[in-house]
Length: 581
Image 1: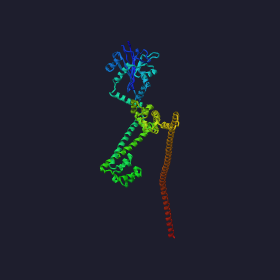
Image 2: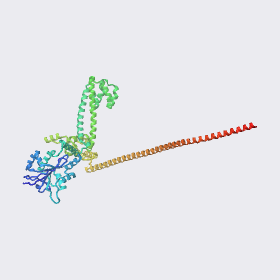
Image 3: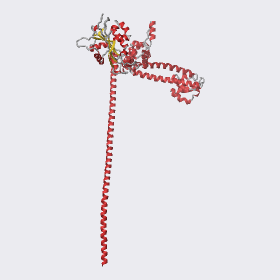
Image 4: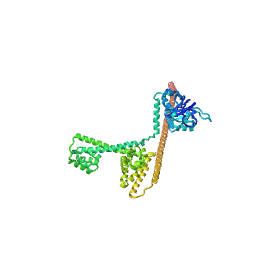
């Protein structure tokens, strides 16, 4: 078929950033398969949209007759940049604002959703369509989902076929050549960062619910059991050359290593060490028996160097046994976080072995109860199928106490029923958001009732009734938790209010004390000022009084002088009168 003025728009979603390519051809080319809204798209322009880690880009493709006439020719021609660059050029580019924006755009595109940023970019970059007229271009997309969403929202015709995908592959291959001022390695760094962010966002990672830790812990626990047993036997054999009678008295491996380290040389064992042996063994009779056996022991003597090595090895065995206890406690705590219902139903160790054998808690939840029943007995199953014998009735769940408590004829029934309940518990643990042991406890009660039914004929409760009660209990626990949280929040708020009120009171007291101090200081200052003023006034008054006093004294002195003069004149007159007489 002859294609005249053929053009195509293609969207390639690779990483955040779209590029549009326009292509035209005058040669024969297979008619592209229109995706949606592209009736008669052979006479329409072709654009390509490409998404990179740095932004949306729009490419224009033209002169497709130079590339080839079919998909195979395009596939072989896009590798050559000289030929591909003649028909493809960059039309528009819209970089992302930040890494978070790039992640949001990538998430939306991966889900087949067109963001507002992409819509604005397409409306601004693509040719405008007049109202009432059909668009003279089409948009090719790599993902049909986003093409459908673009057509529904913007009525832009989209298509996706092998021809479009090959053009997008060429754009992806030579993308760094189209963008100017792009340093080598920048695009790879952007893609790596966006890939890591996208993976972290998609994988909802919860540290507290990592079943891999349980798998490693149960593997290590089984290994430690074997190692502790083999090392304990080695301690028994080694120290039995020196004290063979101790093996029959102390049966426990851990206690034997502890006693061997405490005794060391049997010839030095006396009544003085009786209290220490009683503390280790916890039995006075056994401690006395050990001392009596040491006196009549038939073992050979060991050199001090040999005793030191035996003592060191016994200490290592003790350390391994203690670490095994700590590891078991760790396994119990992790199982309570990861699979609380399964642990409550069948036990922590058996539940951890089931998870480890299945590979993960999710794989265990996907297993039907018939598979979970014989999990761990695969060899026996295939051997029975090969020899046409009886298939096994149970696998790892045989280690559960329920199977041991059942009678021989009911072990198979009990294993089937227990596997059913374990499957339910594992699915609840895997897919529930809140961790609770309510369902595990109820399922355990059902297994107990089934045992009583097999032994005594007591009719058990129906499963629907048990599950309803379990859901009610779980809801009550949630409400209690919410009440506790609210009470804690209220207590915290009240404490904060009390602390704020106390602080306010303290501030008031401090302000009052400060005001009192300020008033006191002001009073003191006023007193000082008044005293200073009084002293100044007294000084001034004192100076004035001194002047007045001087005047008075002068007047008094003058008056006295006058009086003295008058008195002297009177005396003279009296003398003259006497002389005259």
